[in-house]
Length: 145
Ligand SMILES: [Fe+2]
Ligand SMILES: [Fe+2]
Image (spheres, rainbow, N blue to C red):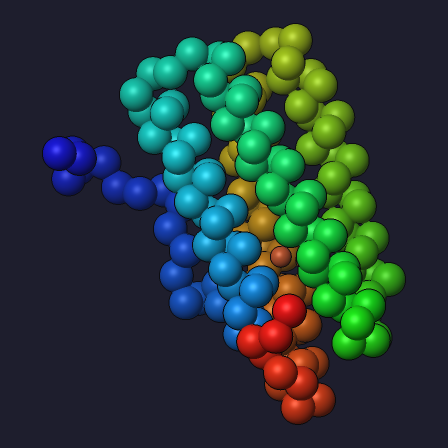
């Protein structure tokens, strides 16, 4: 039974809803992966396991970015270039941090995950949210991929 004192750290709530089904589902999956890593940390799992979980989180983030970029292209989103640049910045920053964490302490691996999730939270409620607004304003379907 889970300890009721230990709260979930990464919980997707409707505060993060963009309103586009595929994006919201993928964001939920990102939060779930981060929470899985958080639990592994609490359980005192070793560096190899945490690194593996981080790699899964980073890979899924990149996969999600590609999907968002495909969607933006398809709907001819006016902020596409700027949004894609934000994704690219994050991708390169996380890759550089991951390289350092692979040769360092477990705390570095955790720091990469925390940095990534803080970034994703801000990006979701800012830039991603604007995609949803644009699609609603343009009368585009929010459920087709
Ligand atoms: Fe996103
Ligand atoms: Fe995005």
